[in-house]
Length: 186
Image 1 (tube, rainbow, N blue to C red):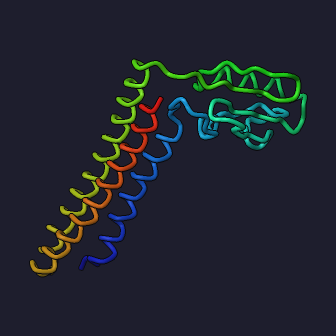
Image 2: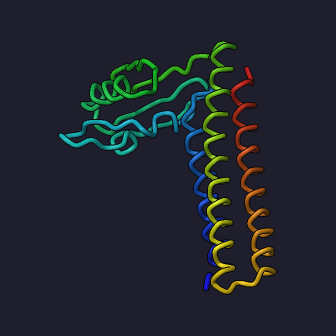
């Protein structure tokens, strides 16, 4: 027989993963503000191995328009610049011999709208995943009736599942609203 509590916990966990994925993806979208998450996916060739940028340099945001990358080994500056150019960051790095700087350009109105659309697409994917989890768990609960789960317990579990679903859809909407506000703020 199905363990209703464990099934609901699993659904909540899977929905949480969808929300976390969305949060991670939104952090990587450039909204005109410097954010070290923009370069979190950059991998640098360090002595023959590809390692994350934060393992060969200190990454910081000295002001809202600049990301500063200070390598621990000055010989790594060229490799860091090359890694940034090869990545999908889309910003040309500048260096002064000690620090690599990324100037975050102010996006145009049109670009801001494109970014907002992009965020909404990613958000919709997360919502679809949450809905798929709900559908999957609902099917499991329906099948569990045949295995001996009472209809009352199944209805209670479905109501609980719907509450979990609504909570995560609300969380996704809040994340999207916050990101859209950040993008549209000049």
